Image 1 (spheres, rainbow, N blue to C red):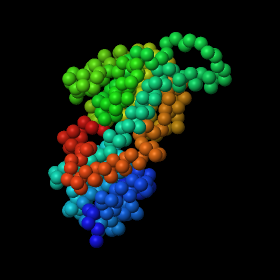
Image 2: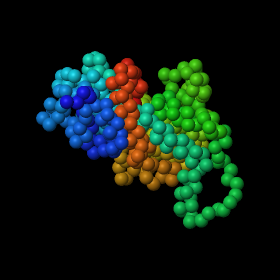
Image 3: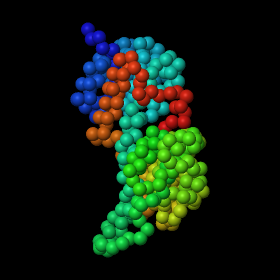
Length: 335
């Protein structure tokens, strides 16, 4: 009989081997008793009910069903929910915290590739690489070597909207470069911004003074269309907007109108709606560069999420604190 605590996967089954490849799964199974072939997509499934009743640690991921009071009643031994993805908002209910069940997320691990994507796009945008590629594709010619005025990453102002995990990681990655980052976030004060090494600006001032604006705020009722017609009009000619957060933070109708003037450029890894309809003008506008929500963990990066969960399980069972615990009080203003 195993002395390891019972665990259960709750996510889209096809994600288990991607997030927990053999070496990561082996490490997780050193700590818990878990069957990778038994994955809960529906907690009422008779095939998972017996295991759920014995489960102490629930390993969740993309596609996890909602964990409501009925589910919690069916899992009386549950003491931790370890999420192998980002936000837990789609499935976690307040009853989990009321019952004293610990919750952890791999959001910090998922923040790294998003921040890396953002850094890459900031540097490429500063050199006008994306537009230059399109011009060469159209003209089928190169202007040859020569000085191109108005481009470059020396002293360019980068405005970061939101001191989220990703926003903070972007600021960290920007440090080695000769750029001038600034931050806007209503929950950050001057002292904290100073600790992050950036000036704290009101949103309007950040938009007016930034060459590149990158959005990393959570999606809440307050942030819906936070970048709208008025805000876009504040951005200087030639500015670039990058959004890797949620599509609804940007008013797409207003953005399309600005892009049609040729005044701004937008790099969008998220859209509203998502995916875009086939007739969206964002596919064809020369100032729009759209990617299919791939900034977050993909391919071999997924194993980092599983490793984060395996490490959290080890901490939990050793009696230590979870490194990435989710606080219910902060959840409402989190992504």
